Image (cartoon, rainbow over all chains, first blue to last red; front, side):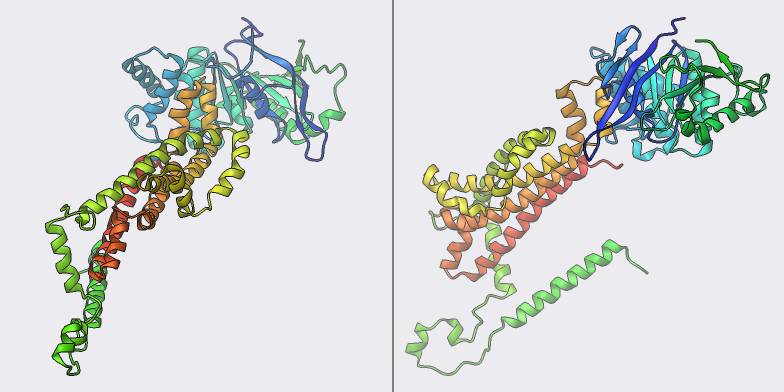
Length: 292
Length: 279
């Protein structure tokens, strides 16, 4: 397996400050993940999570460093990387089918209308919206809108699926069922996915790797948590897994205190280029460190 | 039994109209009693003096005259005596020509201004100065340079309808949601396709609102412009009938101008409903 399918290499992002000078969102940011992996990034607001995702999407370019995907440096947005937006970003004057077909027709420009619609319908079916394809976004519930967003992103068969807190605006039940579907789809198709979330349980359920980011400005990757839970996990009995609470406590501890204090209490040998990989399990009281 | 809101509002409208017509009729009934005068002298005086008839036509006079116009709207008996339908058609033709030219100019430039912050800043001072100028102030300049009164009127219509469309198009285009533009970017949509499939539909409601304001102004201005340039058109007709002292025809023209303006507005309101999207 190519463990450098996505490789963020020392990127920096700075904004000019109002009174002169610059604010550094992050500097010398490194991260890599393999093909077919699911990574979640966790951190407080303002730490630059969205900037990392936008850099991966190509919507923003870093002030230093490069982001490499599948051997190519990102120079701008690409159909290889699909984004599921937090606000779903559907075109309100198009139907469900029209929204998905717009993406399909953008990827395969020489396809006939029938081909485009048939392909779009397949993905509308995947997210369970068959029968609602002629509705406009205004007629859909929040969860259904986000399903359309997912169908649109999946329909262009991207190398990477990028998600910016896609479920944060949804109620808990809808969120749960959409998490199930995203996990099923990603496992079935071996989809590489990168997701921003605020929800610790969402990260535990979905992610293979959880990136912990310290508070900004000048944020850094404190560590990468490798998910110790079995690959065959279900949302309903997730909390019964032996490693669930050690993992959850580790993440919560980080968000509550270490995200703030990490900067001054860096572990010995901390290297921004190779942030420590840890795996909290029930077997050991100290999270197991996996050598880089 | 309660009627629907529409039925009740229609009822009130009809009652108001009836009340207005009644007051009008009563107000123009005249005195009836006139002092006796020498028949020789009376022949020199109009019916106002001899029979006490009101100088202002009543609704019945106006109604009879409307019927005459409706029976023969398109007659042409020389430059000073044309049917009201012909006059209206002249005005409509001028308005639509000037308006169409304004659409052709305002929409692309509005697009450019909306998409380019540089052009927005660069053109803004010109627009701000040109916009508040009364379109009729252009008339002498237009007459002097174009040397044709009819085309000058079209130019005046053009210049007055261009600004609301330009400003609204620029605003609508500039306020296209960032997320929709980001969707287009991530899908690698080419600029021309983006303009027609994302920006145009997103800005369409604002653009049509601008077009609706423009057609209203154009219809206001054409009457005044035709009073100045003369010859043909509903504005000229009003002034000509004033010179004829035919108050009945003046009242009818006012009514016709109102009805036509309403129709133009309703057409664009309908277009507006077509392009509006619920969020």
